[in-house]
Image (cartoon, rainbow, N blue to C red; front, side, top):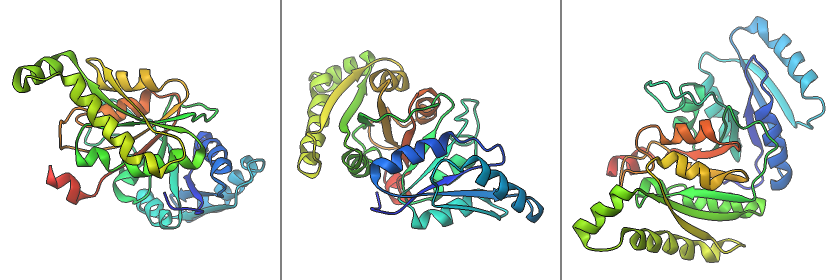
Length: 273
């Protein structure tokens, strides 16, 4: 995470303020400011949107409210994120099959920005609580791309960081049959190694856990609720292919009562898988 830069909060015409509330609570813990950005479809809507935002945001202590016209909202947000520590935005996190994970501008933003994106899903009504930051990993470089930023984020807000991996019973039997070793022991050693590797870089000793369950997203959510922010890479396709294949990230964002911190690894890392 970029230090001392403000949090960027995109707000659409519906004026859903959940991301603003999350960002202001988070900004207080990080000691940074908050900038609100809204993209209008036409110049005729700019003045009205600006007035409406200033009215509803009056008690939030926002540093800047900017409304302008752009034909590509995701690109506008990405351009503005160059001077932000992270982007915080709402998303429907739809589970209806489609070409992307989030089914909205949020997915496009995650693909384009180079900073973490805090996604406020439909169940994340607040208040923002982050006593723990849970980082799901699966042995792949793509999954571990989020590790350093997640650890820095946890340290910045004074939260514990937990590394978790998910092992199903069928996978345990498969590993045992092929490798002749205990799958849980292998996974435990893997996340323990990550925790020890990061131990000298954060204030609190990182913790680790091997989760079990046939549904990866549900196992992660059950472990994280109710007071943890889940921080995860998305669109990973490498390594053990357990955590980031399919719609796991979407299920996590949709089901979490807290915002979810996500980053997309560079194409070079994804291509390596």
